[in-house]
Length: 140
Ligand SMILES: [Zn+2]
Image (cartoon, rainbow, N blue to C red):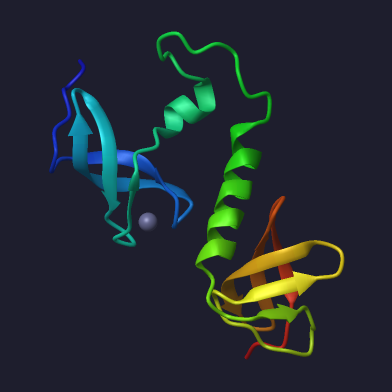
């Protein structure tokens, strides 16, 4: 049943940018382990993340029951940190009378800093440290 993967082949991996389990191309392998993959959707290259392992827990050798926090929460925080680190725009306070663009850093009085993920009509999807929220803005 098990087919040995090799570089250049397709593999399902969690995309850190799309935040979805998507089709990726294997870029690099060490022995039989997939190390780096390229997302076919957004083209970003990142470490391979097996979504099944993330959900079911790993069968990896010698790893004890570490990390009590659910993977989803840890992931959001990692994404948030990466987003803040990558953002080049100035921090802007949240104001429902303003318009924001994807990539903007928004500072919310209650939720703290967030990265605008998506701007839609009259709203923005913003990733905060704990979770993603949809906020009312003046986008048109
Ligand atoms: Zn992607």
